[in-house]
Amino acid sequence: MNEFSYRNGTLYAENVPVKLLAEKFGTPLYIYSKNHFLGQFNAIKKAFAELNPVICYAMKANANFSIMQEMAKAGAGVDTVSLGEIARAIKAGADPKKIVFAGVGKRDDEIEYALDQDILMFTVESEPELDAINAVAAKRKKVAPVALRINPDVDPKTHKHISTGKRENKFGIDIARAQAAIAQVKGLKNLKLLGLHMHIGSQITEFDKHGEAIDKVSALVKFAREQGMPLEYLDVGGGYGIAYKPEQGVGPGIEEFAKNMIPRIKATGLKLVMEPGRYICGNGGILVTSVIYDKPSGDKNFLVVDAAMNDLIRPSIYEAYHKIWPVNATTEVDAALDAKSGTKYDVVGPICESTDFLAKERMLPKSKRGDLLAVFSAGAYGYAMASTYNQRPRVAEIVVDGKNFWLARQRETLEDLTRADVLKPQVQTA
Ligand code: LLP
Image 1 (cartoon, rainbow, N blue to C red):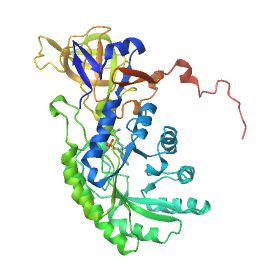
Image 2 (image 1 turned 180 degrees about the horizontal axis):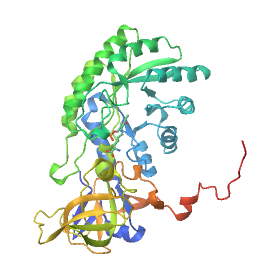
Image 3 (image 1 turned 90 degrees about the horizontal axis):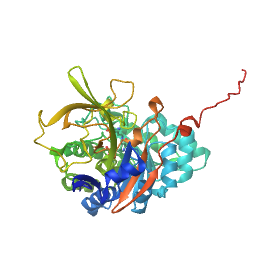
Image 4 (image 1 turned 90 degrees about the vertical axis):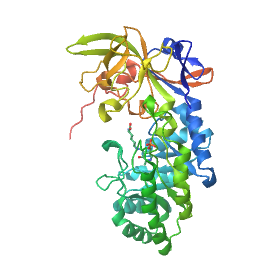
């Protein structure tokens, strides 16, 4: 599904011209397609229909409040990793009974909060965490529902910074220690072992990697049952990749993925939980930016734009590819663009770092001050990872639904930048 398309010489977000939104709300600007998010959610639901999974949207990918509300209305649960995420999910209308809580460093106050909200389960990432949750639950006279996050030592074949299921990664319980951890839960009165969990990495495009990990984790299901602990859930995490490059087409098909996974999940007899993030929102958002200068320098052509690494950090830290193309154009890409008709640009932002770039050596039509560019596939880990580095206020976010659109998050102001500053500090003495 592509909700961003060129019509009559300009880019549309669903049925709204992007340039209209840029004029109305300014740039840089994030624009999301509501129907992309819902369409992707429904595609997963359909592909896995025979298992009727609990689909917990990984809100770390995009926690826009409107989007979270729409996801909750559609029946999605939420995968969370902090107290802040749990609170935001509930505020947006998520059912706590569909919230899972992961993370290698849960503090006591976070555990307490999650227990009080009655979430579906904690996904526990270490033996000391089992003791910590048990202690907090005992204090509150509760039994905490837990799933063990297993580190299956599988190479997901993705960027090293977003791989999480290899032995050297900090995540989960080493599969070699998993049986002992299961036995540990048995001895802890205030824990109930509800399931097993895995999440091997992000932007994974080889389905057999998930399959390999599921097979390894499934072997523990039998062990847990023998220990008298009948599990309910197998949470397979997220990580399903999307297409970032035009030639990747629509990306890996979810149906094919489902075909690979369903028999494996069925064999365990457990209920499936999934935690997709990027698959739901990645291609449902663009970042619109204006050209400030076309700056030839040395052997290069720099296209200086008003969006920067503080708005979209993925190119800087993962060398991630994001398609960039003018908002005013007749087609999505111009394959005929060559050295004569186009310019090879490094698209860079105004931040004082050499790593502040959105694209390198990218062939684009010659551009000038004021031209609008769209940075595609920016719906996941875009705004979510934005910062105010260099005192740049975070940008506005718009949601589009057919012909309708609304401001979902305001552009931050200069006042917002100093809101938490103590302007007249009260000095105390030790
Ligand atoms: N579940 C858990 C426990 C996770 O840690 C993550 C992502 C997900 C689910 C969702 O994964 P997804 O379906 O989105 O791949 N900032 C990086 C991605 C970091 C992913 C962190 N964990 C990026 O921009 O590529």
